Image (cartoon, rainbow, N blue to C red; front, side, top):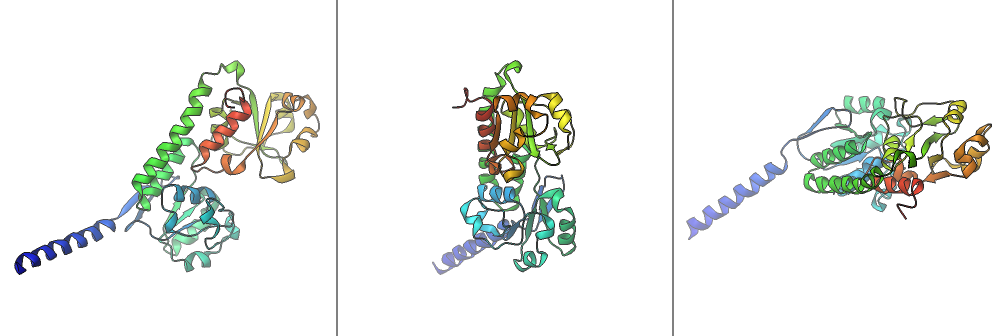
Length: 302
């Protein structure tokens, strides 16, 4: 009996040891810039430098592993109380604060943090760039974060849920005749005038919501355009995120010189959308697509 018990205990010990080794197995995933990020094991301490990435980490079940984020990371509620390493732009982020949190993974905002990323890598930190530009990219980035945080199954589920929710909207808008899809200006900023290019998330939202982007021919994410070009392309709807305060407001837009001839101004179809839903490439993106669809086609999405 003693020998049998000893063998049993030895077998259990081996199982525990094997489980520990399995849990610490190396993990790898490609970030939004196509770079492979490899860790010795799932990240236990994560610092997020992007509000969208913070939301994604919580959505895939890794919220408990996030030990620091930015002052702009305000969702979910638990993200508000985490230690802050700075604001969103690189110049406001404290490398010292990041190091003090001893992260084994830093999730950046991608190209916005390029110089900061270089500094962090020189210090030996692993960095994952979170900068998805389309719906598929968002789902892929969420699943990659799931792999790196040891939450692959919850991440697959969260990504599938997001994809399905967006598809429900696009299935409905796909049936709308092109003649009923309004010409839309997505206004990113008022001075200088900036819109969304075809390689941007707002463009994808606009098209999915059943609109026609008047500047779909422009490449790059945030092109500057002239007031004359907007007037000439005559948008029937003007959409903009609501986080620019008085820099982008319906009254200010309507008062712009020459814009009284624009159909959207004449009909008052200047609509502000929740920035947290349409400007963050995260798990609430489907709600942003729905908000845009309701603005463009209220008869279909009451």
